[in-house]
Image 1: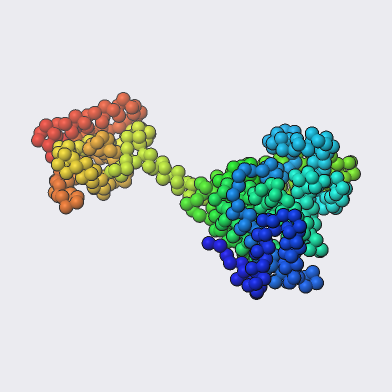
Image 2: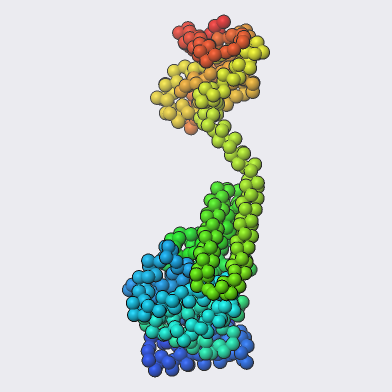
Length: 548
């Protein structure tokens, strides 16, 4: 759902209609007719600008133009991606050095210029330098270079000409002499439309919009970006990524953290080559901080912090490449001055590294107790039978020997007991396995209530339980087991309107543990209890047999 930008303003309907019509027509026509329409469009847009003051009517006129142009250009069918559009993709990853991943692609696109005029290689180096000066904030050098390159950049070399004008717009913006600058960009946009296609035109128009600092502060800026993003968001391309990232960069008053997260989730699906390392670091760093506020998103936040760290390192690498490029193409004095700006960029990266590390550590600390709880939970799950809730064979294999060794050291009597449900197969056959599982679960709960916390209960087999009673003599063991057998005998198990009764056979072997206990001995003790359990079954089941 798009935003009605016209309704946000006080512009008259006829003025809005005229601007929209002209915004379409400048791309549909050519020659003198186009020149006349561009002139009319500039007059219509700047009509509301009083003494070069950007009032709301003027801002609204600009917004209506951009919105109409965006909707028209983005709706056009794309037959193929032009070389100019491919070239614009490269601009997000300057400088291009001979080992850069975009080097081969750049040479392929620009070879038509290089073959006609070998000196154009030096011109491209100068244009890259101008771009990089602007990026690091060395505006004086960028402006001087722009003046030096003015006579060298011919309009016949569209890639270079567009790169030059975009760089100039980024340096100077549109502060004064707005009408002449608007005409220059419209002339370029319509030429790019003719020769580079709709995608390249949309790139140029959005790039121009991004440089208008006075317009970014208006209420129309987000609405424009939002409308365009909704129009093109289904396309995984450079324009979608740039508009989405520009929305992501808006302050929290305009775009909430939850909305930013929405754009983040869209943007990280794009191929890594579309966005640069700085943009990807910002996205992942934000996500790491945002997700750390949700208890169930800890793993995701750690993943985002790791990704941000990876792209932060890529930022360092790129800054080093910029330094190398400046050293290769600047004179000594300019290089020395430019290093002051590069050092600022290094300092910003250092601060970001420190900030990222602090956020990462805070996130870890905040979730440390949760991590410990998770580890404990995982440990418990790995040693617990999920059906009965009692310990499993893994627990017995790993933990029973040390516990018995301690009992032996203190000369403690121990009773090993095996409990088996009588004719359990009949329960499964008659009532179903889910009913049998229910019986095992209920029996597990009864065992937990009947015996002490110091005793060990293990689900030993399918319907068998091993119960190890400490500090218990044979007489006491028999009394406890007989009492438990009677409880089972009287218990009615109700499951899905079915009533079931079971009995158990119990065998026990009691031993006073002295000195060291070995695994072989433990196996013998359990085997003796198992024999006693079979004696109970042979005696008619539902019985307790104690071997001493």
